[in-house]
Length: 546
Image (cartoon, rainbow, N blue to C red; front, side):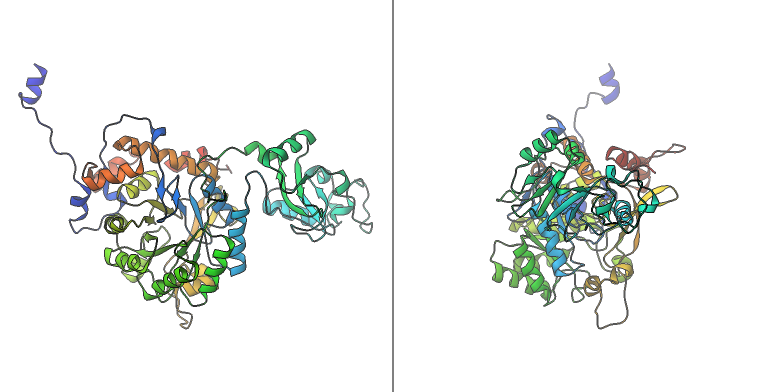
C-alpha cells in the first residue's frame, strides 16, 4: 500500500548529478566550493583505501601530499616530516645555493631517531647564551664542542639539571665553569665546570643502528646520547624525549638507497643552472621550476623550456623536473612537449596570492585542474594541484578532478616544522606566513628575482603577508589529512585514488553544482557560538594552547 501511495507503481532510477565532462565543459570557471561529489556504494573500510600517487613520471608517493617551496613553509624539518608521513617536501630557493643544498643534505642524511643537526655551543659560552638558546629553540640539552658546531671534538654536554638552580649571578659565566660551583659568585674563575665533562658521558659510535643506540640510552638512563666518530667528533645526538615520540613510519617516501625523498626549487635564470647542478649533486630527487620575472606568474615560457632542456642534457633523463605553473591545456602542451615530468596547476588561487586581482590573469582552480589533467593524462604526465586547499574535502575534490597530488602552503603554515618563531596575539599562538610575491618576501633577493624585474625599481606585489594559527606537528597533521581523504574516497566508492580518477573519466563519479544557499547549508549554521572545524583539528594534531 505504501509503495503504491509513494510511487503509483512506477519504478525507475532518475539520473543523479552530472559527469565531470558535463560540469566543466559548460564554459564556466568553477572552484572547489562550487560543487560536491555524490556518494557511491561502500563495500570496504576507509583504512583499505590506497592513496598511492604519482608525483612525477618516475616517482610515486604513498600519500598525495607535497609541501610548497615557500620560505615560510618548507625547509629541512618540514621536508623530513612530509617524507616520513608519505609525502614530499620541496625546499625553497629564497636563500644562497650553499644554504639550500645543505637543507637538501639534511633530509638525505636523516636517520629516524637521530638528531643530525643538533645545536652546539663552545665551552666559552655563558649561561646567558644557554638561556637565550633555550628560549629560541625550546630545549636546553646542548652538546659542547671545541668549535661550537657539529663535527667539533666533543667536550661535554650541559642539561637543565646542570643549570636549574643557578642564580642570575652566573649568567655571564662560561658554560664550562658552573658545574660544582653553585654558590660561587666569582665571574673570573675558569669556566670548565658547568657542563658534564666528556669523561663522564656515555656515547655511541658513529654508524650504530637506531636499535643499538636505543639500547645504550635506555641502559645508561641518560637524557642525551652523543654520537661520535673515531676522532671523538660529534656527528649526531639522540634524545630520550625523542625516543618516547618515535614510531614507525610505514608510508615513508624513500629512494632506492633507503633515504628520504626530497625536492628543491630553482628559478629559470642563467645563474640558476649552477644552483640546479648543486642541488642534483646534493641528492635532490626532483627539481621544481618556479617563476622568474621573465615568466611573470605562469610557466608557459621559453625560459622554462630552456631550463628543462639544460637539465635533461646535463643530468640525463632520469632527473625529474616539475614545470609550471599552468592553468590551460595549451600551456600544458608546451611544457609536456618540452620534456617536463609533472605539472603544477594553479594561478592566483592561493590564500596569500593576489595575482588574479592585480594582474587580471588566471583561472578558477577546479576548472584549471580538470582541463590540464584531462590533457596531461594522455601523455602519462601527473598533475599537482597547487593552491586553494583549505580542508580535507578540497584535497579530495582536487584528486577527483584528475590531480595526482596536492601542493599545500597555508594548510601547513603554522605547524611546528614550518620555519619561523611562534608569537602570541590576543591570546592565540601564531606563526608568520607570507606569499613569495609579497613585499616582505621581495626584500629577499631570490624573491625579487622571482616576481619582478630587478632592473625596474617598481615592485608589483602578487602576494600578501599574514599570520596563521598554530597547527601542531606535521607528524600528527598529515595522518589526519590522510585519514580524511580515505574516508572521502570510501564515501564515493573508490578503493584507491587511481579508481577515483577512473570513475571520474568514465562518468561513474557524479558531481553536482551548488548554489550560494547550498554552500551555506553545507557549512556550520544555526548555532550561537559554533566550534570551528580547525579548532578541533588543531586539538587532534597536538596544537599548543596559550
